Length: 186
Image (cartoon, rainbow, N blue to C red; front, side, top):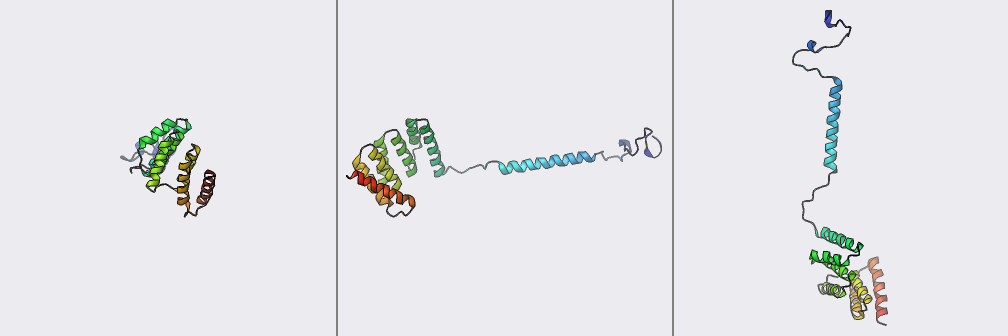
């Protein structure tokens, strides 16, 4: 070393570790910037993860989600032409709500177990839990299998249930029910 802290090699202005005061480590400005960028990226990634992760649903499944799940299972079986599997899946649910019962009736119909489907429709009518559109579907099924009396009964039930409904679908269904009744009563 020569005078005033300059090395003999001519590297003017370079601070050597021995020239720093004791207790203060040498930290370059570049290292501080890199560390700050890394910390910022980690914070952004953590907040993105917390924001984008799916919410955990700790509630018990609702009737709606159970019905949707049942419909999905049954429809997958239909897609595979596994109508017996669809019936088994619907029966396994043991749902007593009208939606589950209608899915089961539909599965029975598709598996050509019409008497079981009609038993469900009859029970839903007795319990006053069948809609006009569903009664019309029951009538169409009965007409398809040639059970004229049952078809007329279901269509008349549909006609009664659809009377007060002013929706466009109900209007269309009422016309369809009237046409079917006229055809069956000839």
